[in-house]
Length: 196
Image (cartoon, rainbow, N blue to C red; front, side, top):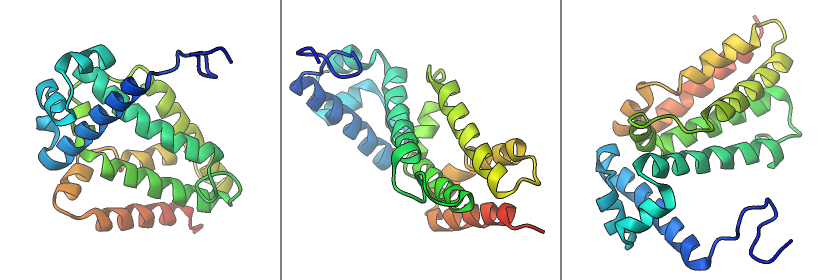
């Protein structure tokens, strides 16, 4: 590995740049949690992070770039847990247990980022959206095909995933019904996994 270059070929991030990046992402998360999606302006994020607005523009380009970074960070963390984390979310557990663990983890991710998802809907899609969606689709389809070979795993899987991608989730989160939502998603997945 060359000095100043990470193992994937990207330039190594300076310590102060890494601190600023983390401060900006954490400030954005806090603003979303406290004030909702409408609070995310570059001025408010800069003030909350203790950095100049130019630092945010230099690092992320614009509001869409900042939101893209936050969405990608959550998605990549979950993808890593699925591919190399411990079971049941990661490899090594039966397909039905992994599917339940996936939907629990994805529902929690959506709940924890519900205001981010609301803000994200106001900007163009992330450049890697197709890749992220293909990963979820392939993962769900493979597990469902193994657990329930008698159903159309691709369509049923997409229908299951769609249940946590709509307007119901932020509405339930804002009304404090996260446990109810988690329970309902689990019941739905379990109902699909039960053979008639």
